[in-house]
Image 1 (cartoon, rainbow, N blue to C red):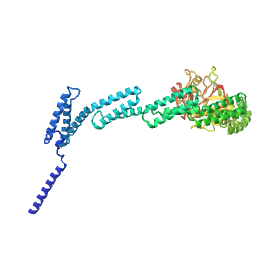
Image 2: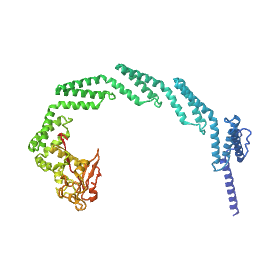
Image 3: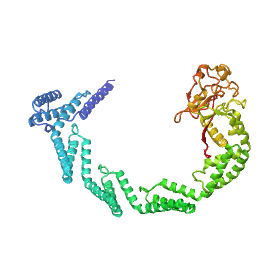
Image 4: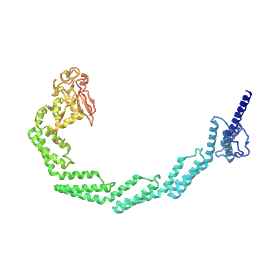
Length: 569
């Protein structure tokens, strides 16, 4: 047992000795006397080091408060305070950050003062460089900026804690150096460009082109060598390239103009074949100019399209004139109610137009809309007479003072289906009920098709036209003229089932609200519906709506304007 105790004592002693040895290994390195001057006691404890550093700082600050520029002796005190604080931080064993913070503050103060003269030198050199630059002495200005740059870089390196360390300043000075290096090339480019502009004024096109090419060469070189100089200008480069292309394309553009003039002469002489050929040549040459000189002011896709339209117009003039003349006869027959003549004319006209469209698909007048109208009229040809007799008598004047005709009722589902071959209505129980659940775009398509078979200008009424048709409501007995929530059972009813108003119109109020157009692109629903209250109906219940909106209580009626249809609506 005693032996065991002896062994334990030896082990504990060994552990304690090992711990002390480890502490000596990880403790701060011993102070070296040459780190401070010989007046510093190398064996002073940490508290003494701190006390002396603080005393030196107080002496420095007291002296600094009486003098704008510290004396060399006073600066030595600040340096000594910094060194002592460094030694104190090394020797002290504490988790408190205040010693390190004080050291940082002292280092910043010292480095600010030490760097200040150098920074003033930077500012002075920079000002001198600006003066030299303003005098046009670019080489001297560059050297001064270079000196200022080198000193600022040294400040940044040697005084990392100083407030005068300024990466942005060194970057700006570097940019100024690049500017000075690039400026001669910039001025050379301006000189060449000035010569080019003068040559253009004097119509010396070849000289102008050469001078612009020299300008382009210098700008391109400057952009490559000094991309961040401030003189690098890609927009200017593109402008010069456009000027060069414009000058190179002068002759070709003149040829195009001459050919266009010939084409117009042939046009005036009614030589349609020659005019078509000339416009075709002009179109091909314009395409070539666009390809070779895309940045030229003479390059124009619009001209290519314009010449193409002219070429088509005159190449097809004889046929197009025949088609348009026959279309006028068709329009006249439809307006006069001669459905048999219209059916015969449209059948022949459609065949001619389809053949024409294959050969001249880009014709301005005989286009896809023109063809669509003929196909629609031809499709309904056998029923046109019946539809006209059913529909036309229902148009009456909005007011004795107006030439605009309005449909007496809301468009019924039967009429809508006859023209559109579909019925979007949710309540489709009776073809005499108003069509509902239509969008504004549906209503416009209906107007187009009705206009085609009537050969008249059919549109939706305006807000003002609708109000004019409604007239005064002061003495109106609502239940006599309107289907509202009071008398409709909240369902739409047959059009024209109630009394007409004093102008002969049915259901302007109630049953379904109706599309009208306001100023610009505004679209409204007006008049209320079978589910509206009496008060809102008497207020006309005007609501702005989305053009794609489909309301189960929304329909429309149409108007015919006095302007005759042009046959290609």
